[in-house]
View 1 (tube, rainbow, N blue to C red):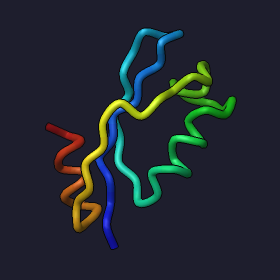
View 2 (view 1 turned 45 degrees about the horizontal axis):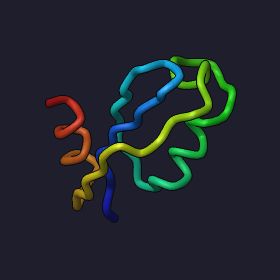
View 3 (view 1 turned 30 degrees about the vertical axis):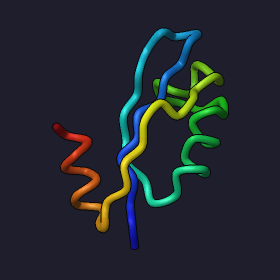
Length: 65
């Protein structure tokens, strides 16, 4: 199963957010819903960058760089 390292950008917040997931489309959708946590405050997150990795461990390692 592949996993993705991603970077989102919110123009409203003027901030970037990084993370990893196995379903990039669903994860971006969830970031753009009102929920507790940093990204829940804004609903204009756009995918700025994405890399695919063969495992969750490698995607997480890239996130931590």
